Image 1 (tube, rainbow, N blue to C red):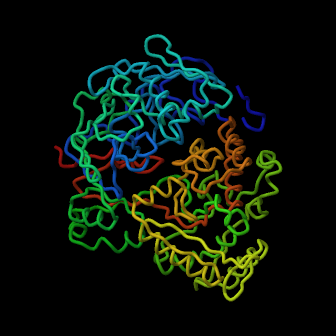
Image 2 (cartoon, helix red, strand yellow):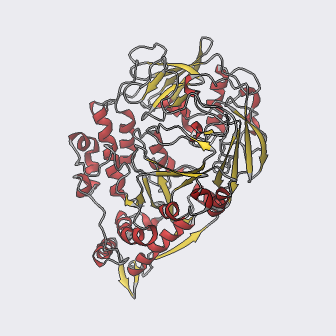
Length: 601
């Protein structure tokens, strides 16, 4: 197995010195909860279960198969869904939302591994069973990984790439032995990111097909009814095997969960105002400020909650598709990034509510912003440091602040100068290349807010002779085109955690750039990015892990793959008072699966 160099050493996990069964494992350090914990600290362990909730989502669905390429973004929400809870299928272990990356027993009641993480063994809970009453077995675990490898979509199809062999151990154990493609993160990814499926209830021959047949799962709910594209209703399984285990106490508190689908967000919000939807997560500061002047808010029937997660900001931005020759030159991308006037947009569109995002891990120790590259980073970067802009390397980098007029000449001149270096000049008010072709591209948008931003961007680009057209499409077309990378530019969000790892490979890795349905929307295929991602996932020492993430941040910023937009420090959710929530907020913010129906007495 690949051994990390002295520069790539990561955190030791709790109890890893021996292969004794463990109740929990952590990527970095030790689990915060001891083996005798009774529940997670952010739940209400005494909640009265019952009642119902109705969620609303923008989109559609035509399948209950969450794992094939066709249904990647048209699957019914809740089947395999961390936001609403994995209602039907479950993983071997479950993540605590109050720790960066710590897993506790779930379908597997314990786990074993060695110091070097050359293997991991999951020991199934003997009580675990499917909704039809049959037990969850070792064969189910092995079958799940194999069928998803052979028939599933990315990333499920790649889970076994780092596994040399799977084998049954004793009556309940399944051991995965790793090959040289594995990293320190691999055991945790296997534990939490792959659904366990019932071998006896799945036809391998038809697994790749979309279906509306209710599946058999081990989760707390079963499907009660389906209205394709409109509604799916889940009902509690009274015989759910896991309702008493510590990692499930305080979760799954409704007897019925409905998910309603809407073609537009404004229609969804109107349904919320009328009481047809119970929760409305709000991502727009102007909407949050201005849209709640109706009776249900003023009389207290609707509560507006503002949450303060303790996480990095992540990155929202216009994403360049570097598969397009037009965007192959980093100078072109850097110039077009400069042309977006954040100060104008923030003042005129959002009442000054936003803060500019300047790092993928802003507001955390993992960010390169304000932190000069130290010896560890420089050694890790090697020759790649020569690609990084000096200001980004020494930590003084900041995006330029404009005068807010929408046409700051100083900033636009910098953009024009960069385009000149890339071979463009302004002729007859058009930015053209040496063959006289205008620099022109299309941005694909999905919502009114995205369209408003694009119009503001379009206005600034026009001042330097760049033609940007805007195409706003419906959800179905948006998902189809984004899944096949059929766009020049797109608006996307890149959430960040305090324990980045395999998800970065899906977003930025070379292999993902060629795989339709992946999340590599920018199309990056860069050996240095791949190498630093490997270092991030192999690190043993905390300082080396931090150095690898900062180095990765610097490479992404210097690559100008995204026109950075903005963030707000809070998360907002409006809810009808009939839905209540725990008062303790975990590290990762609110968890809908721990909320409950307050009408239940």
